Length: 340
Image (cartoon, rainbow, N blue to C red; front, top):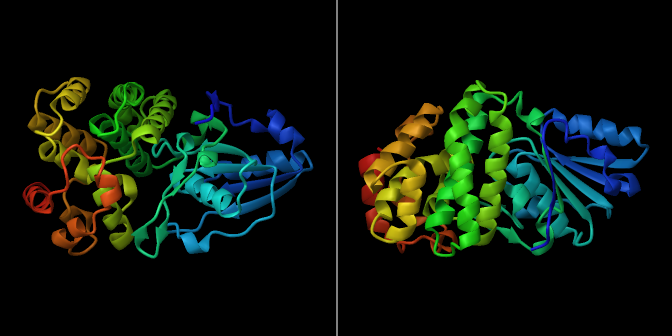
């Protein structure tokens, strides 16, 4: 994959100084409802550029709803993972292969700024996009953009980051490089996630942005595994935020995978400071709870969830990377025992 330019630190949002922006004639900004997107638009408009703004729609992203656009010189995505993914969909759908793509994450979570793929749906079925040109050429990691996020949003996004790092290590496609990214991400997230969610440490946001970026670098190589494969059902059918859904399943998968990949699991145990699959389950479940994340299906308060239907809808493409093959009965047993 191509190399990325990464701008880090407080104030790195001042992207109007980038040469690519100065030279552009037509700029497309893709954003969510998070206020920092407006400040970028104002910066760009002050340069008398032609600036078009597209807001990311609510709900799961649909392939059929990607808009057609004129050909911009620069696409800037400013928002969380959904916003960056939506920008990737626009780039893919409009064949903007040579367009400069800048990602400015305003949450520390999905790592989409470091991957060449995006999560979309066809109705309620997950259908990802993937292409080398979807990897942003420029990434801006500015912790000032995280300051006004609610604690719940911080927790949901950070859980995705933490889970991606773990899934990347036990992944069948794990490499020494992906493992290095993921282990560093785990260490950073373990040390900073609680303080970040609580707003107790002004530096924790900077650290979590780095952890999220590393998680994206890791899964760009390996993709995800079982916890993510199960999570899409809860998001599509019950509107459970993606990170919350993944946080439910990750701890249980230590028990599911315990006999499948001992060397890789031991590396994760060492990173978490535990000695067994049960201790890893207890650590992760407790860690997520301490950050305000739900750890049982009934506590989601989204109505009755049919476990058999949930497991039967699993994304087999993602599950194929899991160290233990898909065993629906075993998963159902574990979910019934630990999540109900």
